[in-house]
Image 1 (cartoon, rainbow, N blue to C red):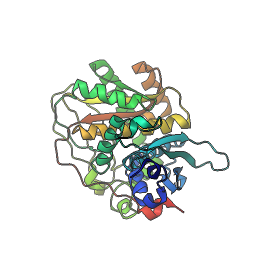
Image 2 (image 1 turned 135 degrees about the vertical axis):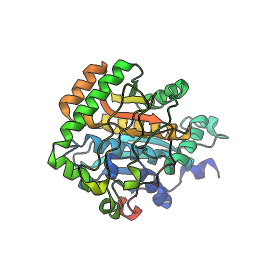
Image 3 (image 1 turned 90 degrees about the vertical axis):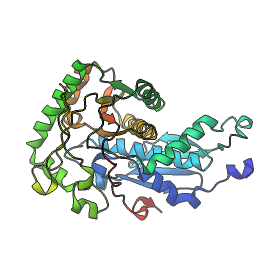
Image 4 (image 1 turned 135 degrees about the horizontal axis):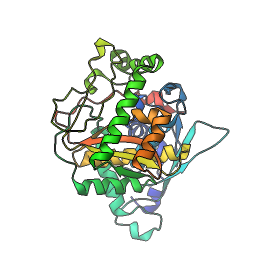
Length: 348
């Protein structure tokens, strides 16, 4: 293919594969709050507020984290087409749900990269191709991890991935920071269990009824309780049953060497949530490629006073957006969570 031909790829011819890549993103309780419009030279990503979770996420912060993750999936889809994706975050009063546009610029053929200033770096193109392969492999793993510590070089690599998207990782490596986080997660979990509206919203997101809607979390993705390991610090996994015996008992876990990280942004606006979502997805795919998976311990970030307390306790310079638990899964990966049909997320 000539350089000129690459310059004129019509993205509409690849609309379904682009939307599928974007829709493999993680989102709060797998709500999938996004939609895509594929134009000849760009992809618009919209927030679908009909899929919001107003009790747990009244400001739509977690909704836009998920939309940002979908933006990153679209970037990867364009990169494997041999194009250089350029992201522009949107704030259009006429189209308030438009979150971002990803433009196709140049090409990523390593043999021609030196000839064009806007061509993607060959190493970046190869990295995007590797991450694109992980879109269907990455899983949220709520069950037990092995007791192997997260390798230090991997922590460094994941921090670099997040930094590329304008966010930062705080690694809770010492026992004091892990104790502080553990206490805040447990406090938030106790508080949320007493909120009947939150419990009802949670139950609607879990189990067969949610799966029939091609969203939410199947029971097979809730994991299993792990036997105590003797560690002094444990982390309270979210109780998705909300007291419903049909949804199973709460899952708790305490690895001997938990890999716990807080993803933070330097300000706390909608654009930061979108960048945080891009950073989250980039991190998760890089971890998956290395044989590691993650789950989320976001309960204290859903209680405003505890979110601020977490920031103070850890001395974070930025605003915490996610608390991640990373490790090597002890059990086989669960089946993939359901995804909405492409026809439901692809706009005309």
